[in-house]
Image (cartoon, rainbow, N blue to C red):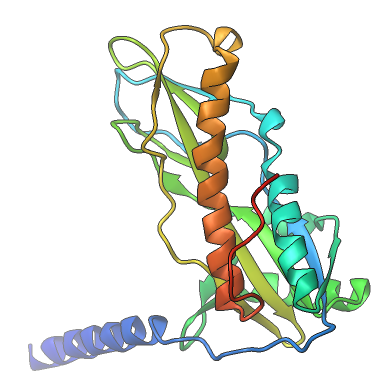
Length: 249
């Protein structure tokens, strides 16, 4: 019996140590001026249902939102400030492995949250191949729905839900910007704010094709602003900028 409680105590102590280590701060990294930065987007222009809940009265319809063009708007917004601070930015095609791991960029290292080992190796390999010192990755993240919407989603766009009555369209903004150094491969910037379903809901009991354009555009704004805020915080965390981003586009 004593041996049993001894083993249990060791397990609990180990878990506490690991939990403490997981929250340890990352080392500060400062990319020198003149560094070359690649930009990769792994997001799809529509929200994706990754796991459905068990609510019988909620219907989710995934709506494509290519017209919002979040990827290019974010790229345009970050390029100016990065260039002004002495960095060059170029768009890189996503590798097959990064596409495969798009919702699993991070993993737990021994002392902190960092790139997963397989992603780190790919970042180092691809950085050397493309001759860049850092890679910025715009990626989707998993997050459960809110406002009574069951399921786990990633990506961005409008999510149509019709629970026992009139339909609503909820803007979804589950996107995170990661800043990585290529050699050695490290996560050097990220905004850890919890992704969320935007508070704005459009009450419209009809099909998406008939949704008024002004309502569609109204939903686009909070999604882009939330994504831009995340991008700014990640770049500040990586010591690449110290001010606001250009979001006039």
